[in-house]
Each structure stands twice: as C-alpha cells, then as structure tokens.
Amino acid sequence: MDQDLYKSQQIDKYLDGLMEIEEKDRFEHEMNNDAALSKSVRIRKDVISGIHLYGDKRLKNMLVQVESKLEIEGFFLNEEHIRQFLMNDLDDSLSDKFAKRLETDEDFAKEVDFQNDLLSGISKFGKVAEESELLNVRKKMENEDFFDKIENDKWLHNTSSTKPSARIISIFNRRQIAVAAGMLLLIAASLFFIFKPNQFDQFYLANYRVEKTKLSAVLDDLESSGMGIADKKRREQLLEILLLYESNKFVEALPLFENHLYDYPDDQDARFYYGVSLLETKKYAVATKEFETLLNKSGSWNQDAKWYLALSFLKIRKSQEEAVTLFKEIADDKNSPYQSKALKLLN
View 1 (cartoon, rainbow, N blue to C red):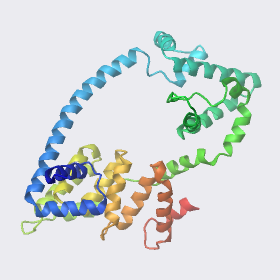
View 2: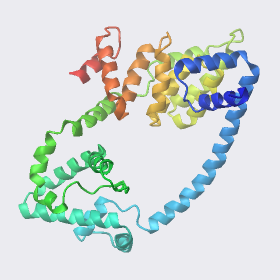
View 3: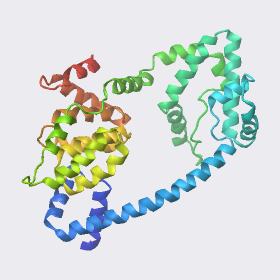
View 4: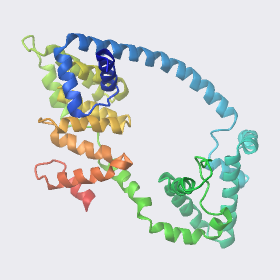
C-alpha cells in the first residue's frame, strides 16, 4: 500500500476514535516523534472541524424547515392524541392535522384502529385498570424490540424479498389482544428480559453523579501554578476547561477537552472529566473508551474510572453483562469507595 495513503487512513482512523488502545498509544508516540505527522493530523482535524461547522449550520436550517413541514402534516401526533381522539377529547386545533394524518399515513391509521380495539376489548371485560398495565407491558416489549425480533425472524426464513416495516403494530391479531388483555399481563410478568433493563436504568439514575468531590482539590492545584512550573500552559488550559465543567457547561467543555487531550494525551485529570462530560451529554459508548484508557494506566483515577465505566455499560444494552462483571470486581475491592453501592446492586 502507498505509504502516504496508509498514513492518511491511519490519521482518519485516529481522529474517528476507531483505534484500539495499544494502536492509539503507538500512533500518539509516533506523532510525538514525527513533526510532519503531527502537523498532518492537526491540519486534517482543522479541515474536519470546518466541514462540520459548515454542515451544522446548513443542517440546522434544513431541520427548522423540515420541523415546520412535519408540524403542519401532524407528524408529532402521538398515542396520547390518539386516545384523546377516541374519547372525543382531542383539542380542536389538532383535529384537521389528525384527520390529514389518518388519511395519508397507513401505519398511523393502523395504530388508531389498534387503540380503538384495545379500548373496546377492555371496556367489554370491565377491567379498566388493566388498560394502563397492558400498555406499559406493550411499551416495554417494544422498547426491547420484542415485536421487531419476531417479525424479522419470520422475514429471515421467508422466500419473499420484502423486509417488514420498521414498526410492527403487534404479533397478534388486534382483536385477540383486546380479548386476551388480562392473560397477557400474567404472561408478560414472567418475562424477565422485559424488566431487567429498567432495573439497570433505575440503578444508573440512583447512583450516577457528576464527579465534583475531587474537583475542588484538582482546581486548587491548577490555580497554584507559578512561573517556575514546567507545564504551566497545560495547567492553565485545563483550569479553563474545568471551570466550565464546574459550571455544568458540558457541551461547551467537550471540544476543549478534545483539543487539550490532543495536545496532552497523558493528562489523566482531563481524560477522566472528559469521560464524565460525555456521560452528561449521553455519549455513553465514547465515554467507555476514555474510562478504559484510564484503567489501562496506573494513576489516581483507577477506582473512579472503573465505577464510571460500569455505569456507562449500564446504558449500553449489549455491554450490560460487562457492567455486572465490573460491579462484582468493585464489590470485592475493600479499598474501593464504591464497594457498598456495588454490593447493593448485586444483592
């Protein structure tokens, strides 16, 4: 492969965050010893930032136009509006939009039909209290892609080339659902997979906190820098970013953290608080990479990084088993400040 093409691909891979930890460390070491490569990476990063800035402005204008169009066409009508319509309680200002959506959107019409059958069936059995429970169960099953998995499994074994639509109203005949409402509740209550993710979400909400316990000490140390300190520029730069973090300005802090870590990839304080900022902006998968990097290096953030990595995994469905493994390790660590919280989850 042409050397220039290979280096270009490596730069893209690095900037896109696709390198494994060891490969990333090697690449950063190479940059530190190759001024030309370091310059190429910086130029590529500036070009990408410029493209993103231009694209963001265009995208924002397009989104405003699309949102206005969707609002006119009734795209934002939801299940609550459907229920209001069926109960003759829909706001007059939404009536025309509802009627238009009903005429032009086949899936929406099916959903209205489904809700109507559901209400009729429950009314027939005189079990109004079961209605909300059934809808909750259905919502949980839909969130777990339960209906999609069954329909897609049919598609995989079907000779037809037509893939099912993204939204599946039900795996049963709608009228069967209405008649079997009570029985479905009993069956669904035994489906462990429906409720398990909610337990993880609840634990995350109960235990995730923006780390500020150690922040004061870090800020005090950075503010104490004098003229004789060798890394004065790094400290002043990080201080500015962490003051934004302290003020909960996480979106503003993110690009500054990224630039700082580009210049100082071994700054563990910056990497940890960058990871927490990513969690605050719901970028869970990206956050895991930062905490994993800290875990693979000796330093004062290891225990905190393991805890926040485990919390990050809770928000990524395919990584929840890894979260449990980490919580077990934390629970076995008597020196971990998070031991009691981990034991509470495991028990």
